[in-house]
Length: 268
Ligand SMILES: [Zn+2]
Image 1: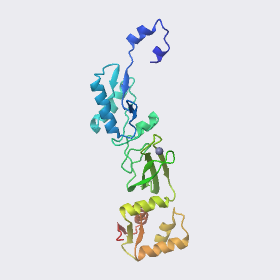
Image 2: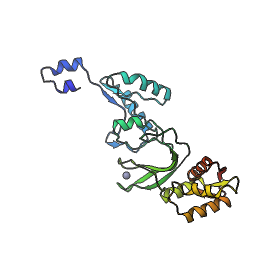
Image 3: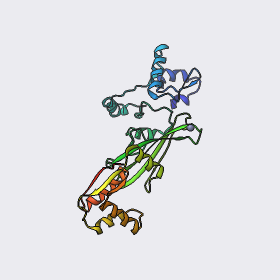
Image 4: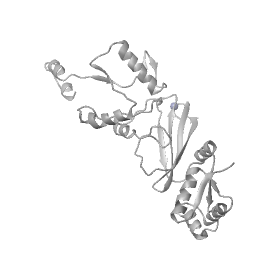
C-alpha cells in the first residue's frame, strides 16, 4: 500500500494491478445507520457474515477469518505470522459488547483470559494461584449509563493485589482498568464477601508460636502491633475472617513459617 500511495497518476493503474489491495472486514459496528456497539461481538460477527453472503462479496472484499477453536487459533498464530501483512490475532470475548479501541500490541496480549473470567489486556504471570472475582454494577462517568465492572483480588508473587475493569453498556468509552497493590477498596471487599461469603482461617495447633504468628501478621502489612495482636487472638480462638484471597495469603505466609493452618468457608 505504501508504494501505491506514493504512485503518480500515470503509474497508479499498473501498480494497482500488480499489487492489489484487499478490504478485510472483521467487525460490523454500524449497519443502515444503526449503531451495533451494544450488541455482543458474536452477534455483530453473524451480521457481518450475513452481509457478505447476501451481497455475494468477493475480493477485494474479504471476510477476516475467525475461529472459536483454540487449536486452530494457535496454528494461525504460529504459521500465519510468517505471511507478509499478517501481524497476529485479535482475541475477544464472544459476549463483549462495546468496541474497545486498543493498540495492536495490547490486542496481542489480550489473548490471555482475565483473572476474573473475562478478556483483559496486559501480562498475566503463571504464579497467580488464588483469585476471586465479582461483577459490580455502577454508573459510567462518561455517559451516566450502566457500567459493569469486574473486580477481584488475587495473589501474585506472594502479594495481595486487587484489580477492576469496566465495560459501559451504552457508550463506546467502554474500558477502564486499574490494578494496584496496597489495600483493596472496601467496596470491592464487601462485594466479594457478599458474593462468595467470608473465609475463615484457623490454626490447626492453637498453641503455635505466638511470636511467629505475630511476625507474619505484621510483615509486609501496614498494621500496628495492637492490630496484629487482636488478629492473632482471633486466629487462635474464633478464627480470622476475611475474603478468601486475604485469608489464603496469610495462610501461605504462616505455612511458610511452618505454622499449620486451614482455610474454610465461614458460617455467617
Ligand atoms: Zn458510558
